[in-house]
Image (cartoon, rainbow, N blue to C red):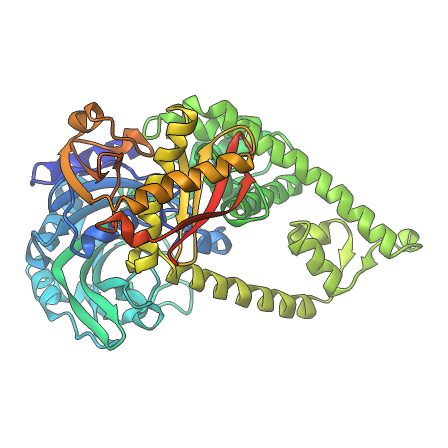
Length: 590
C-alpha cells in the first residue's frame, strides 16, 4: 500500500460513515496571523470547533498538508520531519469517544491491516484542571488487552495549538487525547528507555494516530466546556506508511527513500554512513519545494525567513558532501509527491528557480561574510584558522543568515558558550514576539480583529472596482492593531488612488450596510459573482458573506453585523512585496 492508497482508503472509509470530504487548506493560511504556516489539520477549523456551523455539516474528513518550524532542529533522527500530511476526521458535536475509538481501531487493523499485537494505546492521566479519562480507558479495554493501555499526563496526552494547558491563551480550544503507537520489534531500545510508549523516546514506539476530544475552552477562570463536544483525529500519513511497511526509519519508506537514493547518486555518499546529513537534506528540500510552491520567496522575515533557513541548512549539508547539483533532487521530490499533490508539476519551474536562485544568493552571502571578517581581522591569513568574537559570529548568523556550522566551515572559530548566550537572548525575543502574534489571532474573536476582517472585504471590492476584476487578494494578516492586505498589482498606488480607496470604503461604512452570510451550493455562489481566495479549495456547499449589495465573498467569518461598526478606515502604508505583488496596511475604528 503506497502513500496515495493510504489516503484514498482513509477518505473512503469515513465517507462511508457519513463524513463529507473537505479540501486541503493552503499551506500558507488565509486571514490567520496566529501562525506562519498551517501546522495541523484542526487549524483551519477553529471557528467550527468553537460552535460555528460548517457548510459541509458536522462530520468531516480530509488530508491536510502541514509544516512545523518548531521541528527543524529535531530533523536528523529516524522519525521527525517538518513537512507532513495529516489525515483528519472531525465530529463537530455529532459523535464522541464511544464512536470514534472503535472506528479508529477498525481503520488501523482492518483497512490498513496493521497487526493488533504491535499497537499500543495511551490515554489522558488527568492534570491542568481536567480529570483522568476513564471513559476512553474503558472503551479501549473492550478492544485491546489492558496491559497495552498506558496513562500519560498533559505533556503527552493533551492537545491544543499552543501545547499544555498552562501555555494556552484565553480563547484557545483544547482537550485530552488518546494516541495509538506502532511498535517496531526489530529496533532495539536505547539504554534509558522503558518498553512502553510513554517512557520510550528512541523511536521503537512510533505515534501513528491521535484522537483529540476537543471539548474545553481556556478562560480567565480556567477551562469551561465548549458548546459542543468535538472529535479531532490526526494521523500522520508518512508515519502510517512507516507502520504499514514496518520501516522504523521514515526516510527508508517508499515515499522518501527514492529522494535519499538520488542524493546518494549525486554526492557519492552512503546513507548508512551519512544518514544525518541526508535526512536533513531530504526533509528540508521537501519542505522547501512545498513552501516555494505556495509562492513564498526566501527573505529575512516571517515565512521567507523559514524558507531561507530550510534551504540554507540543506545547502550546508550538500556542500559537506562535496557537490552542488540540486536539480535532480528537486525533480525526484516532485515526482514522489505528484500523485497526491499534482499542482507541483505545474509549479515545477518556479519551484526550481526559487531554490536555485537562493543557492546563488547564499554563495554571495558566504563571499561577503568572508570579506567582512578579512577586513575586520586583517593580517591573520597566514595563521590558518581565525578566531573571531562571539558577537561577530552572531552577526554573521543574524544578519547574513549563516549557521554556526557554516561559520566554522569557513575556518573561523569563536567561543561557543558566549555565542550560546547571545542565541538564547535572541530566541527569548523570538518566542515573545511569537506569543504576542498568537494572542492577536483571529481565533480569539477580538472585536477589532473582526472589524478588520470585514474591512478587507470592502477594500477588496473597492480595489477591483477601481482596477478591474483581474485584481485579486493573494493574502492577508489581521491583528487587533491593523489589517494587512496583499494583492496582485505591478506598481505603487498614487496618493490620489489611496485617497479614493479610503473614500469608497468609508462611504460604505457610513451607509451602514448589513452583513450576513448564506450557505449555498458552490455553483450558485459563482453565479452570484462571489469572489475569494484559492477557489479550488471550495467544494459542494460554501459560506458566502454579503455586505449589503456591495460585496459577495467566500469566507469562513466572523464579521460585524453592520458596517457602521467599523467607524473609520485609514490606509497607513503600502509596500512592494515582489513578484508583481503589493501590500496595504490599514486601521479601522476611532
